[in-house]
Each structure stands twice: as structure tokens, then as C-alpha cells.
Amino acid sequence: MKTNLEKWNHYKTLIDHRASEYMDTISAVIPKNFYMINVFQNKVYECEVLKRIYSIQGLWYNGKKPTKKDIIKIAEIYEQKIDFTPDKAFFEYKYHWGDGGTARTAIKINTLLSSNGAWLNKEDAEMALIIERKLYEENKAFDEQHKKDPSYDYPSNGYKFLGWLNSGITDKEAYQKCFDLKHRRIGVSHNRRGSENTISCPICKIYYKYDCSD
Ligand SMILES: [Zn+2]
Image (cartoon, rainbow, N blue to C red):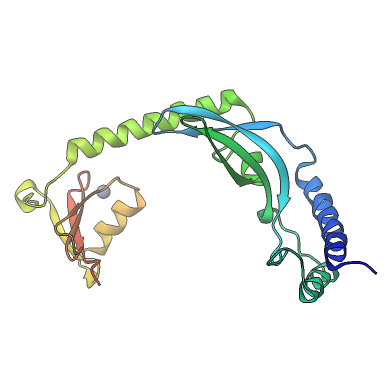
């Protein structure tokens, strides 16, 4: 007679095997490491891959040992056809942050393979950092150049008022144009309650307000 834990492990092994076969189709190779960037600290950091994991709901039990109910649950998961998707396939990894601290987390395999914020190649990460850092510096300079205090007089400085977001913007065309051009806007909060906030675009010379108080 098998114990519940043995039964659990039996199903778990079978499910893991299936998940592993699926992940082989995405990335049979498990890289030793990859690289990510920290734009604020202006550095590339190395991430060490620990293993591939596939996230399946319900593959856990409470307490020290699985109960009969847990066995029924895992058996059901095993018997149903698991609809594997790349979105649930991860590399678990660890990295060092600051003074000797280590963190463990996971990244989607496809995110890494598509170089979307993580890179297999250090030089690629360094290139991305240069681009991101430049953008960061530009944004910082823009914010600094255009920063406003709550008493800033928008109309006298040639800004057009578009109304309140909450009750409807009066010049939708101007608002949409600025939005479509992805202009960087400047936000000012007038009070702690959040009942008056002003957003302005120094390029379009427009401003509007919104209320985010409860
Ligand atoms: Zn604009």
C-alpha cells in the first residue's frame, strides 16, 4: 500500500515529465545565465538560471503530507489534458542585489528568448542599457526643465485648458493628439487628498485636471 506522499510524488513526477517535454519545444537548452539591466543604477547584472519550471494551478498541498483529497486533486490534474502554453513556462533564476543579498525569482522563457528586457548575451544587455539610460537621462532633464509647482499660472504661459478628465475633456482632439504622440507630461498634485491634479504637456502647451480622491 502506497502512502499518500508516494502517490502524490508519483503523479507529480508524471506531470513534471510532461511539462518538461513541453518546455523542450520552447527551449531544450537551459542557459547557465543571462543578463538584465538596472537603468537607475546604470548597470548590467548577471542572473543565474536554476531550473525550468512550468506553472500549473493546484500542484501543492497544505501541511506536511498530502491528504486523500489532495491525491484526488492531483490525479484529476494528471488525467485532464493540460493545455500547455508558453506563458506558463519559466526559468527560475537568482541574482545578487547590492551588498551580498540574493533574490530568487522567475522569468518567462519566451521573454528571455525574445530579448525583451533580459538578454542571453552580455553585449546585447550593455547596448540596451546605453539606449535605456540615454532615454532616462533625457526624461530626467525634461522633467527638470518643465517642472511646475501647484501655483504655476498655465494660461499666462500660453497653455490651453482642456477641462477635467473625470467630467469629460473639452478639446478631445488636442488631448488625443498629445496622447498618440506619446508626449511626456508633467504632473502636479495640488493637495494630499488627490482632489486636484494637473497634467500638462510642455510640447502641445495644453493642461487638464483630474480628481482621484474617494
Ligand atoms: Zn503633447
